[in-house]
Image 1: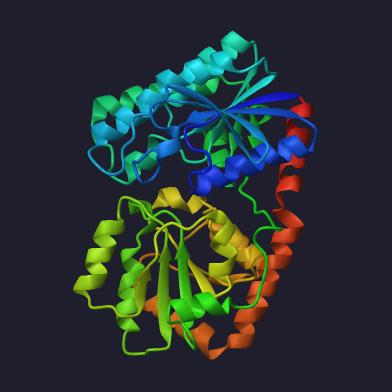
Image 2: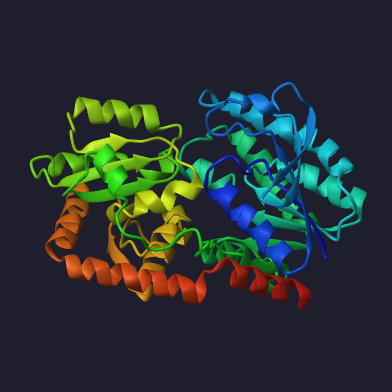
Length: 404
């Protein structure tokens, strides 16, 4: 089969969507299918297009053996909502050229959000006479409304209408979480139209290893109980809870918090850490995916938080899977689907969201019982091997498509 993947985000950018879509494409390729990716010039989250990509409207590229067609995008790092809309719409229009330059395909797979890219996908599927698969990793505009990021009632109605139209035009919908799937079923979307394509983990890239001594020394972490947060620093994560927990543990010098990543909330978090005088907190910025196992090797636990919102009860953050792959125990501050997964795997500790005291106590409990922490990490690795290796995820998903 021939797949055309349309996404605004793709490596060499780093982030959950970029990693997930690359692994999907490589998984399809390993199973003997043809894959072409149409995406934007790299710019997220820095808002800076690397020098080798500047000054072009269109470029043919290659990422780990994958054919990648890149088209122009208006780059933006942080700013007003209208600037983000410019970013989305610039690629929504320019990507039509990339689709036109791609060969024929049987399936056009589009990633949402951004929701607006679905309009391009509908046109592209008509041009290519391809079946449209609409992949949803975050319900939009529902999530933006719940987070208070979109409040204009006219815009909300328009985007809800666009969402419904795109669902009707799609041959299949692919849900990243069971929560998204259940939401669709409650809306009356036929179960036969829905497929399940969850996050997974590259178990060759993310695997247990001894603490990387040069990095320990370089960061001054010898003898420290290291807690790691790795991922996007956005509003949804509620990372203020981690800093408040760090404040509670400030007088206990064996704890150290590492923040790896970037996002719209990072400047606020750095300012908050400075205001609270937190010597136990370090911000390291985004790191290449290939380096993440080295950082996880330093960690006694990986903290994954979300805000306390009904919307997030159906979430399963992608960042839980690399930690599992590296046999690092999880501390999950959230509710719902991800809690059930972690408890089933016996891979970590779960606490209520936005509770710094509970988070501090969970950290203390893992420090007091190091054997328990190691056991939770091993359990997580075994669970990921059994259920979340990318090749088996892709094969199962293809089976759903071919059954129709």
